[in-house]
Amino acid sequence: MATQIFEPHDDSLDVVSAHEIGTFVFCPEQWRLEYGLGLEPGNQTALRSGSRHHERKQTAERTAGRLLQIGQKVIAAGLILLFVLWILGR
Figure 1: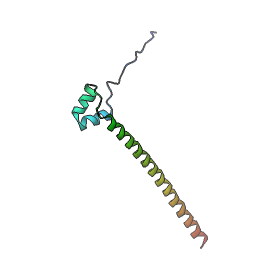
Figure 2 (figure 1 turned 30 degrees about the vertical axis):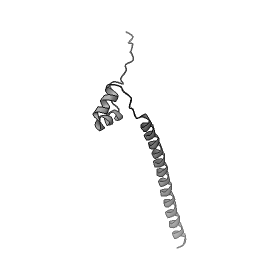
Figure 3 (figure 1 turned 60 degrees about the vertical axis):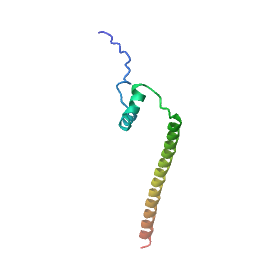
Figure 4 (figure 1 turned 135 degrees about the horizontal axis):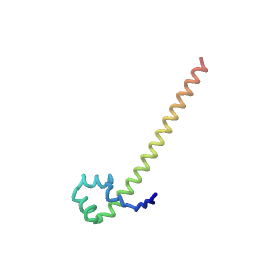
């Protein structure tokens, strides 16, 4: 029985990310410069600012979602309490 040796294979060239597709759809020239020629965008400050903005937005969305869940649970508990009080008051 022969021992088979597997050599590591870099599949990164075979994988296309969603960001890369979005870049191409938005602006094929930007895709060519960034992914084809490997040039860095010149607006790094704006990109970092946008990333911070989206992080804050994500935090706000998560907080709002949690508060909605809490509100739904409070409403459900209140309805159950009203039903129990109605049954006991009969």
